[in-house]
Length: 265
Image (cartoon, rainbow, N blue to C red; front, side, top):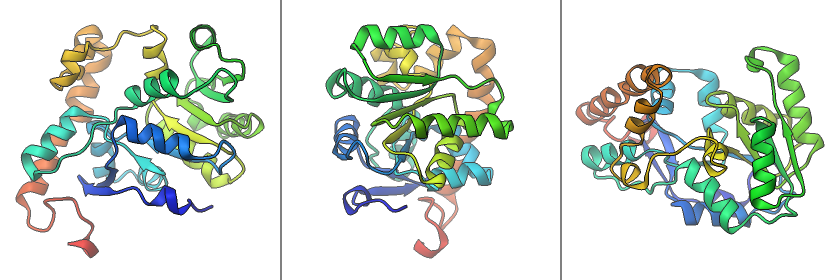
């Protein structure tokens, strides 16, 4: 399965060990909408500090999922800030939550076919009620489903038997990315997959999002930490904080300042 010339023409910046598309929310939404509803399945990932740390640690499956993505969109103000301060790179911000909100607000219509993997009946009810969706299919895999081949197969089968223009993978990272990669590898699904974390919960009001001023000041992580310190502390201090070391290492080591692969240095 190959992407069209239009899909591969997106400008990218190779930094922090991965390629990131130079698209803001408006441009990314336009790119998604330019894909035909029945186009072969391709998916979007949204790198943040935690993802970049996981990639740097050599997670082969996660790397394969990232390399297989159609678009990698900068999800993090922290990543943008470090890229600007350390490398004078200006990465457009395209958080998965903002892209999801823009698609539902400006592009998705009630008759569009939508598939959601994850969430519960209340999330589905709110999506249908708020946006008048008439063709929404949802599948909720069990906890720990990625360790169960049958449960993974059930997710892929559901996506394939409910062909949709938009496939929202709301099962958290790295599960969403790994699942999207497997769906694409099997080569039978259609539409655009979006690995979007809690985005659907934000737009339906099930989970409050940081106020805009905190997001603009790169403090969304602090908002989440204050709301749920126990569950979010590990993500901030263990899973994400090493990103600063990665950036510093690339800044100080010749040939690795931009994260370029060896053949491009």
